[in-house]
Every structure is written in structure tokens, then in C-alpha cells.
Length: 414
Image (cartoon, rainbow, N blue to C red; front, side, top):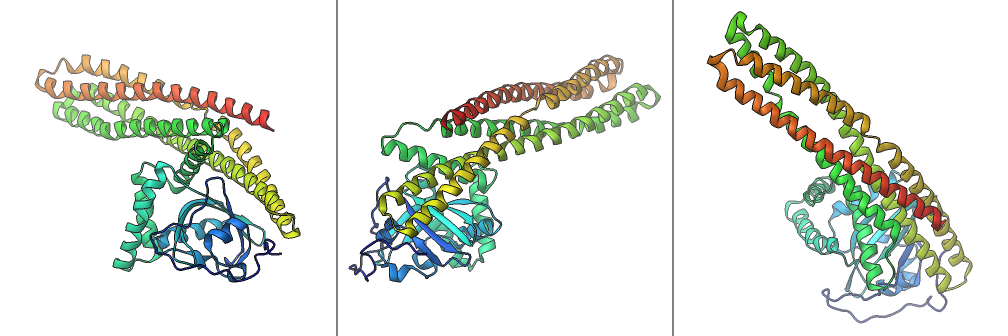
């Protein structure tokens, strides 16, 4: 059943407006629309109709792209459809065009439901939004000039998102939605959402975790050539180099073990980041959907409005439940201590080998300078590993503390 607010069934006329003008709406207003699986509009709320400046007769049973603006790259819509067709929610900045030519920006949250999709949209204002306002028109212009297909454009968009410091689009959309809600709360004079604040802290900690994991990986990569150089020295010294050859072989064994542990640690760091981003986004979406349901309560009491409100309530409850499960997942995945202990054990083995190597190589004056350089590189590598491990342990403790505080916050709010 379609949502048509009382008295709005007739065709409304608007004077044409310059494309540079905005179709205004308030920070306290939320758009809502529901489409079928083909993107055909089946329902919407009063804010959507008013700001789009179409009549309900012109909106209902029409493709949602009726409000599409050419400044938005096709890559954005390809990403959106790929995500929701896979059964996952997505958030994206979208510039729309009203019937009279005005434009309006929204942060759109699109979520799959049975038989179609729900979209709730809010007015953006954060620093992320300022960046996107420059990125989109430039990418759309590239699409037209170079005749890029949506997939090629999507690759460019992904590269730009990574250039902003995000490992993936889901990481970006979680951070962007959280930032938009925080900015919106400030404008509306609302108190800080403590759950989202904790999740924002967790997101930053997860980024730090990955940075230090990559730091160790880079140090390892830079140090990979050391055992080869030791082997070269051993071969040049002939029989006198047998002891150095043994040291080199031991180094290779320790190095292989270290690489395997680093791979496990890196994978775990990505899993923690993904769990945090999932919780962040799902919790934020649930909050917006709850507010959108309240918008319906205030707009009217028609049967169709009630149905849409119930859809939003059900999905908000489901997303809130999923967010809490993801929080529990964070607590499970932050057990890095085993990896850190193993890395410390291997690093200690390297130190023992370095000392033995220094003593053994001191007998070979002809290669002393080269040996000193190799042993110095090895010491630098160990120091870098030790420093990164110390930082990872600190971050891990902080993640555990923030997660516990967040779970407590959610239990109190339940």
C-alpha cells in the first residue's frame, strides 16, 4: 500500500529554478521512501515529496532515478545496487535533483527488505561531505569525458576512498554516517550519542592496530634480504664460514615462523576492523530508522503510514540486534596476546642469534664491516618489531575497554 499524505493527491506546480539553487529542508527532517526490487517507488513520506517537488502522482510507481542528478557518478549507483542486491545495507552521499531543477544533498541509507528496499536520508554537513562535494562532480566529468563504464568508474572511486585513508568503502561509509550523525546532533542541540562515541573511538583504535601490523610487515619485508647476505658471507669464507652458515639457516627458520605469525596477526587486525565498522554502521542505521519511524508517527495515522512505520521498527530492532552480536565479535577477535607473545618469542630468538653472530663474525676481520652492517640492520628490525608489539598491546587493551563500555551502554539503553 502506498503512502500518500492527506490532501496531496493533486498535481502541484512549481516555477522553474536555477540548477544552482537548493531545494531546502531542515536538519530535523528525514526522507523516507520504499521501492520494489526494480527500484520503483512504492511509498514515501511528506519530506520526500515536498523537497523533490513532484506530486505523488508523479512519484508513485515511477523509478527512483527520477530524482537522479548528473553530478553523481554512475559508480555510486553501481556500488549501491551491487551492495543491496547482495543483501547488505549501504550508506552513500547522493545529490538529487527536484522537479523544478533545484538540487539537494542527502546521506542515504538503503537497506534490503522483503520485496524491495527501504531508504532513509538525512541532511549532511560534516567535513566528509565537503570532500565528497568535490570528488563526485570531478568523477562524473571523467565518466563523461572518457566514456567510462560504471565498473571502471567504481575502481576510480574506490581508489579515491583509499586515498582518504580508508581500507574499503564499508569502512568509509561507517565513519561517514557516524560523523554525519554527530554533526547533526550538534546542530539540533542534542546530547552526544555515547554508543556512537565509543564506536568512533574503536574505529580509530582499529586503524591504529592495522597501521602497526603493516609497520611490522614492512619492517619484515625490508629485512628479508639479511639471511641471503649471511649465506653469501658464509660461502665466501669457505670452511671458516660454517658457523655463519648455521646462523643463517637458523635465521631463515625464525624468519619463516615470524612471517606466518605476522600473516595471522594481520588477518585478525582486519577482522577486528571489519567487526567494528559493521557494529558502527548497523547501530547508526538502527538509530536513524527509529527516528524515521517516529517521523511517520507524527505525519499521520493512515494504514499505509502505520505499515511503513512497522517496517522501520522491525528493521531497526533487527539491525540493533546484529550490531550487538558484532560487538561481542569484537571482544572475541581482540585476543592478540597469543600472537604478540609468539612474536616476542621469535624476536628474542633473533636477538640471541644476533649476539652469537656478532661473536662469531668478530673473528673474521675481512668481513667485519659488512657483518656489522647486517647485524645493525637486524637490531633495527628487532627494535621496530618490539615497538610495534608494544603499541599493539596498548591498543588491544584500549579496544577491550571501549568494547566493554559500549556493551554496558547498550545494556543500559535496552
